[in-house]
Length: 250
Image (tube, rainbow, N blue to C red; front, top):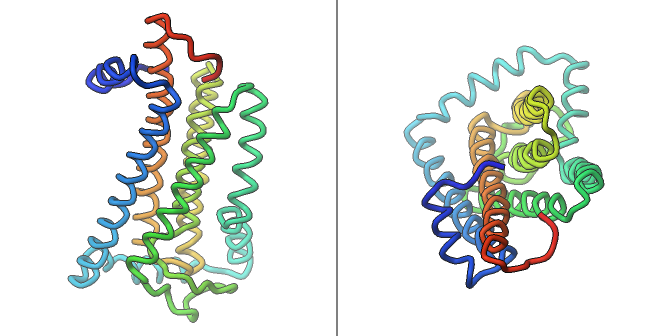
């Protein structure tokens, strides 16, 4: 695993005698939650500004129109089946399946903590974003049933999928040494995330700007979860060199 940036590594080294790796990881996640929730609120404010001035949101109707023009009954059915994988049930099952496989291979608690953090944080961001904006979804005349009634911004399917799949890719890359396998995993996870976001627009369940914001927020939260694990790992290394035993696990 690559080391942390030098300034952060120095901070970790300074805190190592007084803070264990688990405490450091949870502290990083706590700071991360605060940061991404602030980012979510900021994204909501930016959204309101650009919609008032017909800025980025000017993409929404043209892009949805293009998506509608390409719909067929067969593609709509396939899109609905695929997008269900990003719903609460689908994303939960995917996360659990990844957790079981990665836990068995790594023989550690790491996948459980990181995937739970990814899923929990993304869900919290989704709830906050929807509550702040209350954005209306596209009219049902432009959408494929079943219709959804919760606020549109950000896309929860996209945000949750982005956070979870990026952490899955990170965990898988920790276990795989071959570069081509790592590349394949990253590309597969990225394609899944991209497809999930586009399917939400294709089906008329979200505006394109809902999906753009969800991609950005999901990546930001996944980065914080990964950073928390790297802080944990670095803290263990520093304390081990100082002769402080924190037990096993990564």
